[in-house]
Length: 307
Image 1 (cartoon, one colour):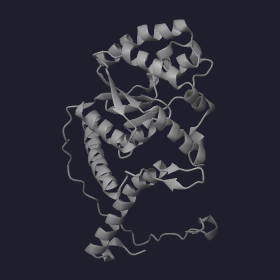
Image 2 (cartoon, rainbow, N blue to C red; image 1 turned 90 degrees about the vertical axis):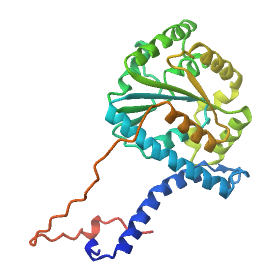
Image 3 (cartoon, rainbow, N blue to C red; image 1 turned 180 degrees about the vertical axis):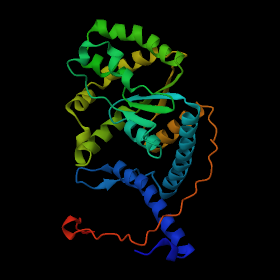
């Protein structure tokens, strides 16, 4: 491979541009993953999803992701602590929104928490105890893909908690969240809202797409049957846990792309962040030693270049 010093300026720019384009292709790959799949295995997109619509979507998404990077720099520089909860029905698009928010951020200071069902020991603990270790330290952002509101939703609907535990949750959660806010944590709560018809279509898409079938658990299928029970539980949850210190924000999520953009835009508006000054980065000259020569890798260690 040629040394960079032997390449022209134009060639270096071309290679850098190709590398940048490759990084943005990750979003295109996820975009392809979002396409619906018919019973015959054919991928289709929304008829309204025109090239111009997609161009505008990507233009706005990349702009907003740039702002998210500035937000993270500000959070780190000012030692803020941020918690964002994402709730909604199965297939509402929470995971897709979380991916786009965290996609360009530094994973050392922005992490996603998606806890499994509690084990036997955790079921005997104070309900909020298993969430507390995941709360942020200074300069961190934590995104909860579902949260302590499991008790108000799936646990209540599926009978995994008693009526007394359910009532105790609503007595405790406002105080718990007020404590978090008083401690200096920025707490945002988003509910992704979709229609009955849209969830039905998204479940069918998962059933017929081998790459998405892992997303369908028996619990998900049962939640589909109990749509009305989940609706009632959601309405009670929003009513009883919507407090001035930690209010709920509802994202209309039938259109996934619009939902992501609206959520990110709203999220950014909740913080008085500003661009953090950074000293220009200077790439140091690599040291060269005349007696060093790079050793060839044994052929048996090489991955076959099939592609």
